[in-house]
Length: 343
Image 1 (cartoon, rainbow, N blue to C red):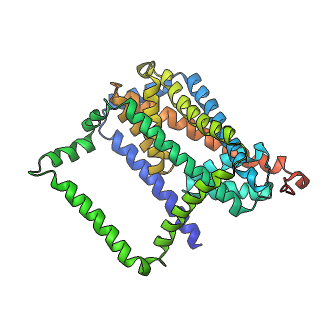
Image 2 (cartoon, rainbow, N blue to C red; image 1 turned 90 degrees about the vertical axis):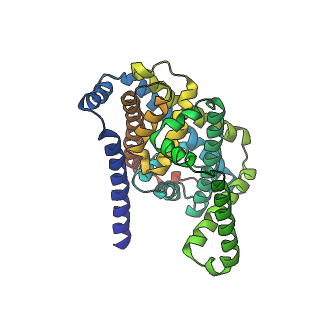
Image 3 (spheres, rainbow, N blue to C red; image 1 turned 30 degrees about the horizontal axis):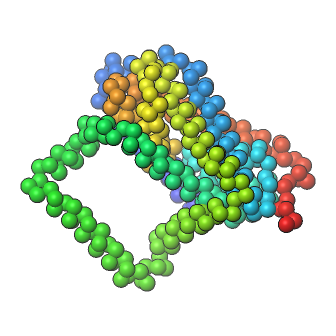
């Protein structure tokens, strides 16, 4: 009962946070601007959104194939359809609660492919490690491509206020010394008190994350198909980029924007999805802020952000529910379950 209450509170919290971001963006808009957003959504060319959804589904299928490559060295050969369904169920679960998706999709393989939950979870940690590295590389590429545009981020309200206050200081260089001093002090305190806190849940959680990250990197050396693993890792992000970029064509004001701008939307949009569960509320806002740097009217950028978010979220909800429905039907014969190779 206690766990159920906590889970319910988490869902309510993330929904409330999303609603707050929607209100924060909308409350300063005029009725005409709100109507303009509505008209943009109604008049958009939804064929481009349909293409984006197809690209997204292909990326999920590629992720399932990559997951199979990670599982294979353990002696299991799960069917691609099962891992695909598991991936979609995981995405669906993650819309409700963070990290629930990782457990859910491993549970699917444990039930329908007889792969132990612990082993499946180990491969998911490896996957998350690769995703984190890939996002970091995408961010770096984005920074290099748009280095001339990063100064424009000063025009956003939050950053402008921070920089304005910073520049008002008589000796701004002291901020650096204070910052590094705090970091050094925290490291010293941690070193001196590590034996006293190593039994706390927080310490164990951080340790678990670090060890899991290192174990994920180590497990990559056991892959039997390194070429196809690298191919899928790159292909997934190419599809992510394309599924964001093609939607630009659905609205006149964003049609013709470059693939590089699509990369900026992908990278910062991904960060928004991490910050707020499912990106609800904050994702369209981030898209609007990014596109404003390229002279796209804010309301048009906001409408495009909602198109992207709706397309991605509806795909996860619909295909996730279909996956939950089809899995028991397609796996009635338990003799079809994959077994470990005798070797």
